[in-house]
Image (cartoon, rainbow, N blue to C red; front, side, top):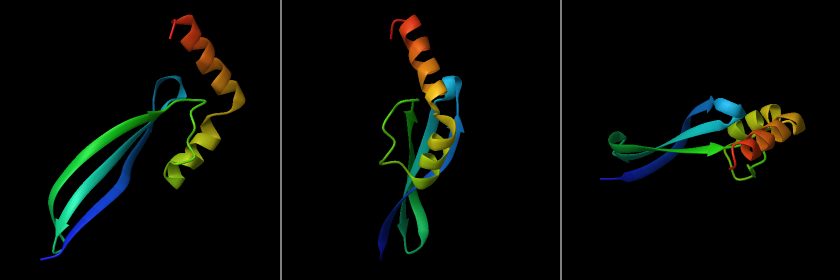
Length: 82
């Protein structure tokens, strides 16, 4: 009986204000059969440090989070008092 834990980014979405929502699946396999899984989500907002993200998330951040987008996001947050 061999147990294996697999963690992978299985969904990347661009949502409001150019925020990037990342869904990560954590699956447990026993002898190559998935016996359990769960999902976790987090958001990478414009201006956030994304250096520890999955390579695909990094590539999207580089393309989407331009200086103009970051400035617009920060202005919107300030307007909302966040």
